[in-house]
Length: 110
Image (cartoon, rainbow, N blue to C red; front, top):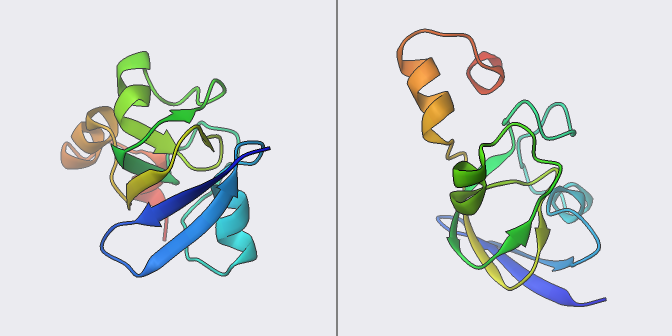
């Protein structure tokens, strides 16, 4: 088991995450206000842009292969290196839906 540092840019929040756990798990344990909903990789509420580092997220069904290279679903993503993430950033497919008034899980969150 390897521990990686996950830094959330724009905040003073940094956590240590094992390569055997999702990024969301320690966020919840440490009281970090990471958004989430379904916890099964579909709703995209927990999306974060990957600024540095790599994750594995084979069950992130809500992302295309191309989006999975740039975005992490924190409920599914397991770190493979130290990371810098920008929380609350969504892939273009969901951003386009929100701008056109389409219904998305992230846009519907209260």
